[in-house]
Length: 242
Image (cartoon, rainbow, N blue to C red; front, side, top):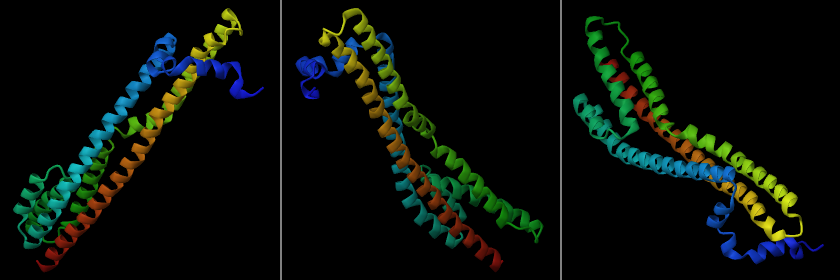
């Protein structure tokens, strides 16, 4: 039989655009599938919220870091540590500034200890402080990431569950209405396919956004490593001159 001329395809075609609009499919869906559709829509809204919030955060952090780093390094080379800390406080949306300010505070504290103990190493505590600060920033950057990963992994299966429920409904309709009225089955078949499509529609952007944010997180951590290395080099230079 020609598939395009089959009773099912003809029934779907006769249904028209309005019969298989999202609203009509939702109205005709079973209670279970209505719940699944609502869950998938909520997950999609959460994905959009996380994407907007994270991209705004990264944009603000990048802009603040660009302004902060030049000012911070200039004041650091002059030995004006208070001006360096003010620069970090002014550009507090920068994740780089959060870590470097913490490292600078530790260095000043260790220098005070070295004044009473000349053999005291003031650099290693700074390096450890930077590692701790970097770990804390990494946790901040992970906000919402686990949710996106979970949505990307589970949304297709949630949609598939709706498909299974829709197919069960098709067979139930076949039992009660018989195979003669194919139009009566078209709605259940459309419902089954729509939930799978919706699950993929939710999962694909979630995975894509997750990968984009992971890349941005790596860039921020790399920037922190580079800036911290420059700061420690400056501390070592000052220590060698003292």
